[in-house]
View 1: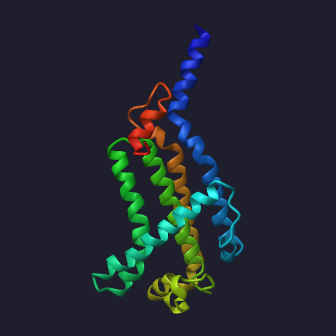
View 2 (view 1 turned 90 degrees about the vertical axis):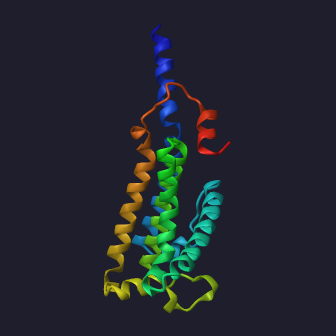
View 3 (view 1 turned 180 degrees about the vertical axis):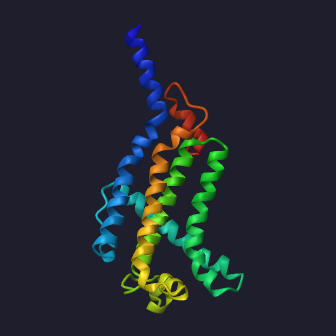
Amino acid sequence: MFGSFDSEKLAGWLGKWWFSLLLIIPVILMTEFAWTGLSVNVMLTLNYPFVFPFSFIYFLTDNLNLIIHESGHTIFGIFGWRFLTVLGGTLMQLLIPFSVFLYAHINRSKITAQISLFWLGMNWIDSAIYCADAYYQNLPLIGNLPKSSHDYLNLLSSLNILDKYMTVAWLMFSVAILCFIGSLIYPLFVRKLYDYVDLENELQRSGLM
């Protein structure tokens, strides 16, 4: 009876936390990636040696985020306010994963909610690194645009806080860490917890199957 109780308890714990365990390594990698860029040099992030298979995952998400970012400029440019047009890239990067998280949370899809929180954290980190480049504009821009097109050069200059670029970047990094922590501890906030591991059900609810 004692052994049976332990097995059921372990199964329930795994059913609740298995995906958080999978996220730990990506969270550590992204945190180290951002910390290196912000504390040493943002240029080190261009060819950061992510381990496989996360290197491939990051490649896909980074390109997806780039598409979302550029579409944000276009979409928010409809309003005709230059500041919002420039900010629109970052806004879209944050709004899309946050919207996915809200949808997943409302529909109680735990895995999708955790993925979207992690994705949101990644976008905060991308924005933090971009912001940390605002003063020197060393990062290459898409389409070989001139340095004057740098989003955060324009945004921080408009707000007269260009000299505070690293403070803003570290604040963004802090928000990213909160998102990562949220992705790891999200099962604590799920109303219905499973007593047994049911990977098929979880994957179906998340849309991955």
